[in-house]
Image (cartoon, rainbow, N blue to C red):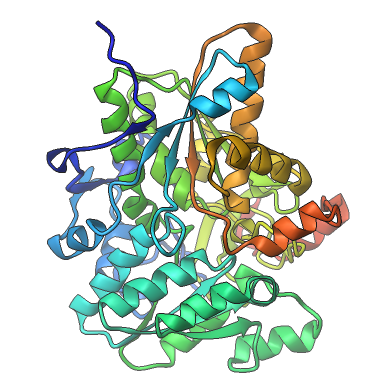
Length: 460
């Protein structure tokens, strides 16, 4: 007899992952190497260890080891909130009158409200093990800053967070929560760094960007003794840590013989999307699956759908190594929309390579349509989603409605990356019908593309 699938699919203690899964090990065509901006040669560990923790550098450069053990000191922290629930969206299915089965992995059950804590714990743990005393980072929507503040407090490390200026203004309670955990929060760009002052001199009224905040955080890290920079997305070691999302999801679905036809994740820098799809994509690369993978991004910052595949800097100040990715240019300044965590100019190199090679699809939506989907979801599923997560909800609803139109019974899985309880300014704007949509013009994008490095690797 077929098991009835419960609303919540849980894992036993014995089923919980003890390894992170490195998707790059199973890619025949690897992502292009990170380049040193001076020599244009692949970076070495020594090049990166002045900025990042040594163990993170080792993981960043490892594209051959499939399974990397999760240290006991990190698993201990994970037990406070993992495994995260995998939920069958029966109420949403009923409301949509769709034959589709819809599942979502809910990563917002911890205090930070998002999946970001999975990598924050790892990076803070490695910093402590290395003997570091402080860390710096950036944050857009504030989820990563909150997660990093929580992890730093747990592992007893000082933290400075550069938060994108417009987000710090829109989300004062995120600032309060980050400071409650003992971190120092600075709106970015600021006059506390050379990078910040340079950006403010060029554009005094700027609302900031993740690229700006990264520049400031890196500058502070390299100028401070026993300090390193940590980040919550884009780089491959972050996707590695987030693979616990996909592994938990796959183990739970396999128990009920459920195989997703479509997997959907919102995409800013790529951390949650990469983590959710990792083990499923591994099967597709091995020819064992026909699952479709859909990345969803805001129309206001469309790095996949309208960006260029090129080597680019990871920050506005052009201080980072060069990463081959889909990018809008490090000088691209996104609009002040409410999806703060999806305002990064580029996309993770592994996901970019998969998209380039046709293993991954991408769509974009304007924010008013995204909030329509968020409210529809909240009314039936009882969870107020973060604006970022709501992009995935919108795509899942669209796919479910397509099943209704065609009569096909497809299995849809999406990542609910976090809750929206610190995003009430956005919901207030939506409710008051003052929310506006912005789509950059071709001229806007060209200004960002003009900041791409003029190097041989970027020539057609």
